[in-house]
Length: 76
Length: 256
Ligand SMILES: Cc1ncc(C[n+]2csc(CCOP(=O)(O)OP(=O)(O)O)c2C)c(N)n1
Ligand code: SF4
Ligand code: SF4
Ligand code: SF4
Image (cartoon, rainbow over the protein chains, first blue to last red):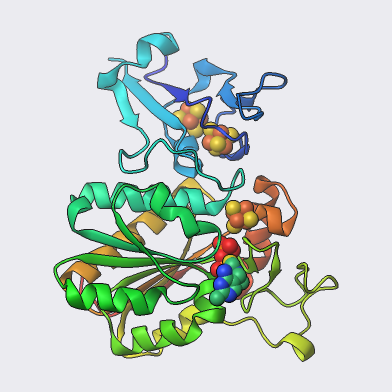
C-alpha cells in the first residue's frame, strides 16, 4: 500500500469548473464532470482517479474559490 | 484506505479559511482575485488579527471584497483607497490596515493617492492586483497593459507611440523612501501561491509594526478580459506578463 494516501472533498456547489485544480494536480486525480452540473450550471471537479491522490494540496492552493478540502494519512 | 476512510477530521490538512465566508464570490471562474482573497483570509486568521484588521476595498471587480472576507472593511471611491487607508491607520494606529486594488484603480485613477501615500510612508499594506486590464468595465486598456496586447480599447494591440509604455508601478514605488517592502508575486502555481502568501504576511506584519508602506503586486489573470480559458491565461501570463513584470522582491528594508 502507498505510504502516503490522500483524498480531497470538493464543495460541488461552490465550484465554478475553472479547471485550475485539474491542471495543478501532479497525479491527474481530478477531472471536471463531463455531463453533470451544479445548480449554477458549472461542470464541477471530482476525484476521477482517487487511488493516486497523495494529499499534496496543490489543487487546493490554486483553487480561486476555496472549494477543496484535503485529507492525508501516512500508513505505517 | 478508501477516500471515505481518509476523509476524517483528524486527517484534514487543508480547508477553506473560516474568514472566507460561504457567500458565493461573483468573480469569473478561475479569476486570480479569488486566490488572493483566500490568502488574505488565511493570513489574518493565522496572525489572529481578525478583530484588529481594517481592509479598504476599491472600485473594480474586487469592489465587493467586503462581502467575502469577514473582517471590518471600508469602501473607497475609485483609486482613493490609499488616501482612505491613510486616515484609517492614522486614527487607529494599532490596527492592521490594508488596501486591495486593481491596476486600473491603483495605476490609473489612483496613481496620485498611491504614490503620495507610499511617499509619506503610511503604515499600510497595499495589495495590487495587476491583470493588465480593466476587468470590471469590460476589458479596456490599463496603464499596465502590455505593448501589443489586445484589449477592447486597443483592438489591434497597445501601441507605444499612441498609448505610451506599460507603467511599472512597483519599480516606481520602490524608489520612494516611504516604502519598506515592494515585491511582485503571482498565484498561478502552488509554489507561487505559497510565496505570495509569505509576501502578504510580511506586508501585514509591517503595517502592524509601523514600518512604512508595503506593496505586494500580484501579477494576475483576467481570463474574461483576455478572452482565454483560465489555464490558457496562466500560460499566457507566464509567457508574456513575466517578461515585463518579473516576479521577486524589489525592495525590503526590514532586517530578517
Ligand atoms: C470615479 C470613477 N471612474 C470610473 C469608474 C468606472 N470603473 C469602474 S471599475 C474601473 C476599472 C477597474 O479596473 P481595475 O482596477 O484594473 O480592476 P479589475 O476590475 O481589473 O479587477 C473603472 C474605470 C468608476 N466606477 N468610478
Ligand atoms: S491533493 Fe494533490 S494529489 Fe490529491 S487531488 Fe489534490 S493535487 Fe492531486
Ligand atoms: S479550482 Fe476550484 S473552482 Fe476551479 S474547478 Fe477546481 S474546485 Fe472547481
Ligand atoms: S472580469 Fe476579469 S478580473 Fe473581473 S472577475 Fe472576471 S476574470 Fe476576474
